[in-house]
Length: 159
Image 1 (cartoon, rainbow, N blue to C red):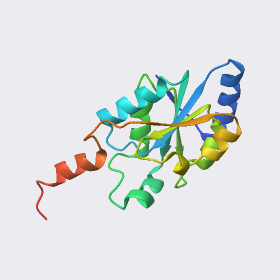
Image 2 (image 1 turned 135 degrees about the vertical axis):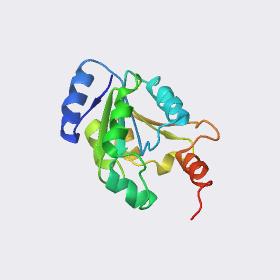
Image 3 (image 1 turned 90 degrees about the vertical axis):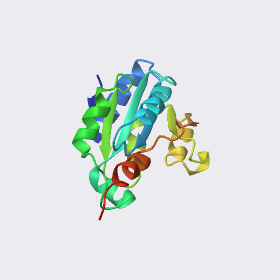
């Protein structure tokens, strides 16, 4: 089972992993209402290396990005569930709108985002490539999204 760690711990963890010759993969997201698409995406990301670090938007960050009704699930609960997945080694929350500073701390060998992102638009690409790492996208599972789940749940409600 993975661990939820603080940003400051990541540099130490990364150094230990690097000394041990481990290939570190990093991805990030909101991960609100965890679903099959998330799990398949994280599984594919983990297969790219030895250790998977997941940066997760904290609640305030999610509200700024997704609106006042999100997240549906609190940051503590989201982090707990992510860390319980066998494919996730570490979860780290970030309050900023992007994980740029977190990526600097982790300095992953491979930075992963969903295929809806253009490689050149992926935050942290410059950091990872300057350090000799690579950036890669992974296809999403079709018709699986938190937004769709929320729409389905709320479509039956009356105002």
